[in-house]
Image 1 (cartoon, rainbow, N blue to C red):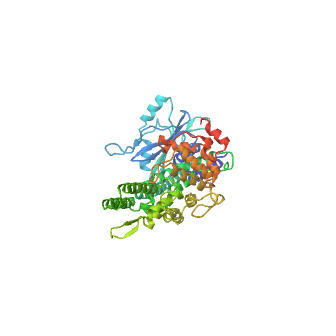
Image 2 (cartoon, helix red, strand yellow):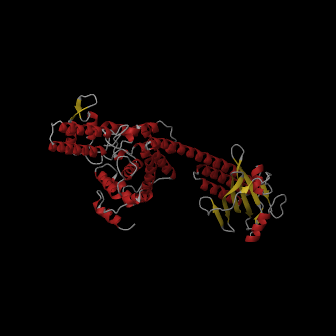
Image 3 (cartoon, rainbow, N blue to C red):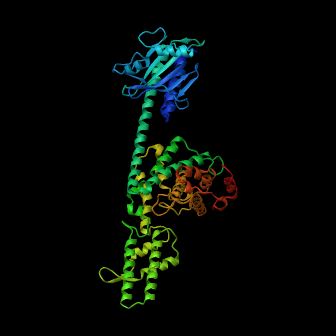
Length: 536
């Protein structure tokens, strides 16, 4: 191959490398590829890539074929060499060292033989050679400059190899190519750093939003942290699945990042939800728990009964029976107020009976024992929220979608609103806010739906319930599978890949991680139950 043809080939390779570098997202891999490309260009036996940081050169990647060194970057062993300071303790430039002089001057340094070179301190190199038996001869040290002309790193190659294996000087044509590569690499590196900084800022702003929600309600802060973690665990498990309906699902690193952002933002609409609704621990709670007002009325009725007895209007037996009934009614109200049990028709009838009792208020007039609003709340069949309050809570997902769809998402994050906004939909189309069916939802949105439910079931920081055990939570999730609430295929992966257990070991206290009888979990086939019963 002629020299011109060889140079043309190298230029084509340089262009291809520049394109490849511009697409690399991982910083450690990018640094590794820069050094390897430079070594390939120059047929160099070894090389080191340094980055300028805190007035020093930090070792990032080091390679040497003859010595078998494979250090730094994404795939090498850790580098423990201390950074090289750019200045001495007295503030003078430490430019007797070649790499430091290159970094400070911004000039390329091409040395044919380190042992014959003058003006630089190669004592460390000679000591290294004496210890290892290596012969460091030719050096090519090239600065990496960003678009502002600032040196952000140094690329140093050692011992250019001739065709016969001997060591030669780095040719001027090679020097120019490596300089071009260093220039392209510096731009790619700077862009990667800027992107990383923007992503860090973006995530910090998201955490700022979640912190604001957390400050409004301490019961949601953990949720905003745990749901993204569980979503990622389940999504990774689905990506590992190579059989069944989900065998074709896969995720790149960019896909994972998009899903992570969606998980972090899935409840951002809660920033608009009133605190007294989010934190409603009992049925009568508004800004305070109104059970105290009801207790006061019971005390009034007890005193009325005592006065009636003292006046002779009520005998001792009637008085004691009246007090016993009042105590029973008060206990019934208190139990109903907790929202911990399902309210049957019989219990609701008892509350309605108590509500109809009359008592004399502060104004001296008789009135129903419970106000219409108190009666409505105490008769809530499940939980502590009435219909109006549940609508307020449910509105958070509408606000989440509205807020996220208003943002100018870049291409690699364009699905965030759909992923984040779908976690309250159901497979049968009976969810909210859009009533989507399974076929209308992405796998990622369905994954987040399971993660949101399972986190809520097991969470121990809610004001209205204790955290459920694994077996209790999986029983409820299994019923949801049979009721077409959650995706059945994702439910099976959630169990088969033991995602539930990995999550529990990371986030749940030991007392919630109980033994599971898989034959009693709804929605689990006998085959899967047998598989899950075997040790992992």
